[in-house]
Image 1 (cartoon, helix red, strand yellow):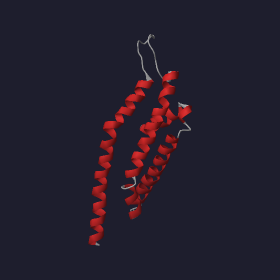
Image 2 (tube, rainbow, N blue to C red):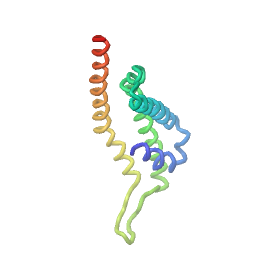
Image 3 (cartoon, rainbow, N blue to C red):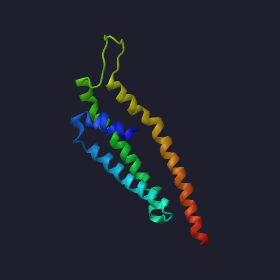
Image 4 (tube, helix red, strand yellow):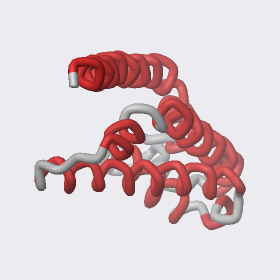
Amino acid sequence: MSRVFLTWAVTHSVKEVQNEGSVLLFVVAWTITEIIRYSFYTFSLLNHLPYLIKWARYTLFIVLYPMGVTGELLTIYAALPIVRKTGLYSINLPNKYNFSFDYYTFLILVMVSYIPIFPQLYFHMLHQRRKIISNIEEHKKSA
């Protein structure tokens, strides 16, 4: 969901951030990640998973995940002044629904949410890596 959000609700909606280096950062990280992920799934379905693909799936995230998150956060941060200035997607009171929404504040909350979520997901992947890579090494030794 974060990719859809970053792509449409931030990068597409705030044209001024589209040329930021941070966009390139997260797009490159996402692209490499997806190439590895779908190669892994394809070869797994074919019951012919090369070691290199498995290794890449459980190793390259160590660099790619922080790289993507950094790009995402920097892009949101770059969008903040424009969102505040234009009032993009914000709904002010009074209105007939008696409802308000401040997209600027929402973006800040999204950024803050990375604090508890990123480490949890990252350490989960490290745990998975330890489990998978150690199984590969044990299998190699017994072969």
